[in-house]
Amino acid sequence: MQFRALSDDDVLFVALGYRLKQRRTFIFLLSGLFIAIGNCFTVYDVGLDPHMGMNVLINAIVALIIGGVGRFST
Image (cartoon, one colour):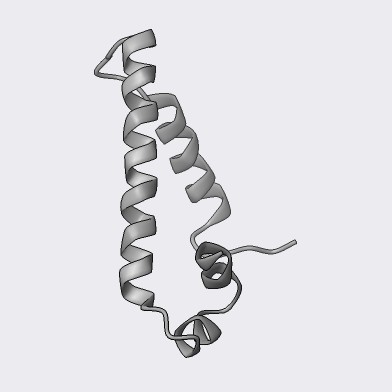
């Protein structure tokens, strides 16, 4: 319930007496742990390659050049 309260309203979360910085640090570490475990399983299944993620990186750079930084027009 604290995670939901933190995602809804930071000011109310602090007003209820919870420690904001400690909770955010815990959530950050927990998400990093989940990502590390998922990546370990992916590497175990697929294997390592020095050029992993290069396609995603090139597509992101092209999108950055074409779209521009900080331009979100709809």
